[in-house]
Length: 594
Image (cartoon, one colour):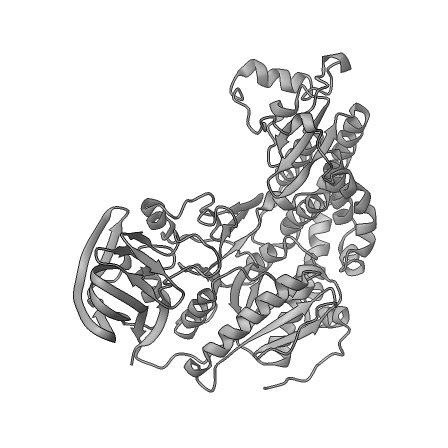
């Protein structure tokens, strides 16, 4: 008996762009359940949601034989292709399908094909309709009974969370007939704002929770499915759940047929605009977070093939990350930022990605603020203090602190730099800081004024039509580099040498030369109205640099004792008992087997 593994999506359901679904020529109309073709239409499904990575399914699952199964009406040619390189592909099989009514067809993948990518191509010889395309597989034993708990953490995003819960509830209802009695899929909406008005939905539970950030929200969902429901796996996801529900289905099937007990699946992150631009497909942590496959345009056949090359990675972002609950520790109480990094580094999981398992998310630069700079600095230092697989030496602390703070202060982001220094001070306090501040309430009171400094304001009308500066064209000219160093990027120049007519600069830019000659600038982004006004402040600049050097010295001096203290306290801070206390639950909550 063959089992459906991956459904080929016939039309976009979350975004309007077809580029990740198929490439079409001729006349066609893409509908959610049907692809209607006119005579001469040619549809190539070698795409993000259409391709089948044979090597992944053969390596990590018990599946032995694979098929393409579909439903069609009219007169069409269906071709099965094998891709061995960006521009090397071979037709494995083809079928002429002729029927007035919708009928099923099947094409088998030859047993001798063990690697590479598979795709399907459809050519209409007359008016026709494709109603279903699905990659299926057979295995010598039945699939494992996976009980998958989806966890969605939300805070004051009522409309997004409600829409996501309704969409996922409908998906859960639609797959019930395909699940065995021992299998289950359910969604827990962890409401950190305690203000979500969520109606009763099939397969969905609403869990009000203290505002413990993403760390506490996902920890609460993990607790619910692991301790109270006895589920086998969890899937952490964003509250807007901007993914095709097909991504959840593929994750479920891969886990069901997996021969690797500790298999974890990381979802790929795409930009909201343009939706075909890949932001991250798994990530490494090497002094900082390095997203793999960043900036790839997956409309490109070459980039699409290159993207399927298997790579090891350290962690998967919690916008979409599925894993077995047995043997994993609870998250460290980071609140937000860094929790997914440490979870991936700390827990021993076999982490992979799969084509078509992805979500769309907001550009990271749109969220940048002194608050996020504080959180980033804090978690970068903590990864080296907590993780045994990251080797720390004096150079590590210098590289983590100096470049990051100097980038902020040299580009007039003084509030961000002061937030980064506050993070260092908090890390130096040791484990007691984290025990006392899992909700960040006292920290937020200190950061709020700094955040207000980088709040967008109205830009003078005269600047509205001005070209946005984002990149220096002369970074490699040695005397300009020397000039930036000698003047501390303009801070040592006399005031009369500064240009007092402000300019607009891309918020994502840290090109020093763009900031050097100006007394004031406006940082702008397409994701927000107005701009952040920054002005040179010589006294504040030197105050920050002096504090930075002092704090760097302190962490160099105390790093060994800090590391010992944090690693000793970590098991307690990532324990069930610690999180039960934060949730306000009594120890040993009874399990509900329903």
